[in-house]
Length: 308
Image (cartoon, rainbow, N blue to C red; front, side):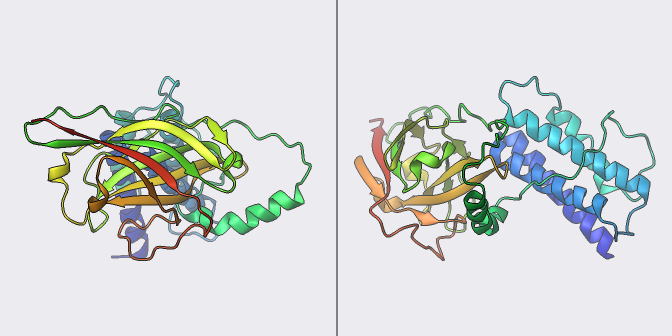
């Protein structure tokens, strides 16, 4: 298989991954995947050295990137009229897979957009130093940044599952998180997932609403998360992950700042305080690094519901 065909195959896999997340209601993951792919397509289109694609093919790729951004924007703005829906986006799957031979009119009247900075999840790790330098250099600046289109500002929390005789359900109340720069975090929220020992999702991923109360070194959430599986059905080695995310207006992306997790032997009623770890999130729990030596933690409260 030629390099260009491998590239197209990779794009198609990314496209399919994004639309799968979208159809499952995992909106944050879908947005991430769409933005990664849009950025890759835009870079190919803008590359002056690329001779793998004709100018017409590059126009097609650029229009696909536009559609991905439009779908991403629709998901990020909960009050939008969904200018570009999932079913429309799925019509592009055949085009991206067969872009070398596609010779029909593009199905949507969209125009390519200029290349923008769209950062893939994890790329922001390389920008921390640069961002600090920018902040120092721009001290006293009055430059205003446009408000972001928030991804699910109201959250995507799910209701409690129906009870079953002899089975236990778990409600986790996220009380607060301790961070040295808590007051500087914009639109902070938590992503909660349940993973097996290999880091594979066992339940639908949930996002809390954006937290609005900050106090000293704490961000207060005070929100209940209903774990979408009976405790008895959680496999050995599973863990519940809490990823703290916030928006960076200067870079125009949402970043994971840190994460925490709770293992199965920690499931018990009452309060629990768990440690925070440096990003990127390590769902396999192999290479963990504490975020800080300071006594700052994630504060939770667990309630077990057993139907006898």
